[in-house]
Length: 168
Image 1 (tube, one colour):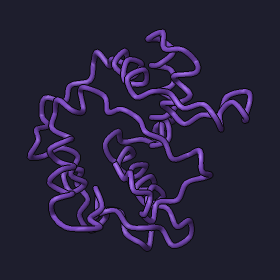
Image 2: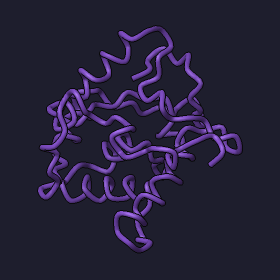
Image 3: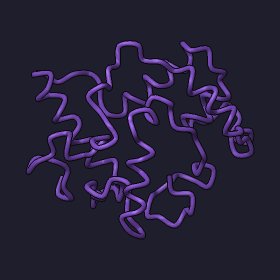
């Protein structure tokens, strides 16, 4: 969502900045309205300001990923094999199962192709990427409990005192 590239987000390299479409199901449940409300709330407002940067990695994802692992253990009453990073693997499988080409899948997921030169200079058009992501369907995923007023609020994920903090 940050097309200015003036954020504190860390990326691996210049090619890591990319434009990707938002899945229509995420749009349907109100994500664009949520993002607009965040943007309208002031300059330099992060999409998820509840997330903090981890001191040891300087990444926002690190603390959330650790919290998500603890959440899974409490929700499943055992330590599942899946992790927060597993979503990337499942997404790649979903793209493959939907018949999305390797090139479009790599562009959507930010994965490198066999030729790093090809990866550096290949940029899919947004409409082509959108057609690819629209093929991904999670038939058993029920998002009916979400609405534009509740979409993806980190606080909705039960992040009280045990939620992500800079100390994690």
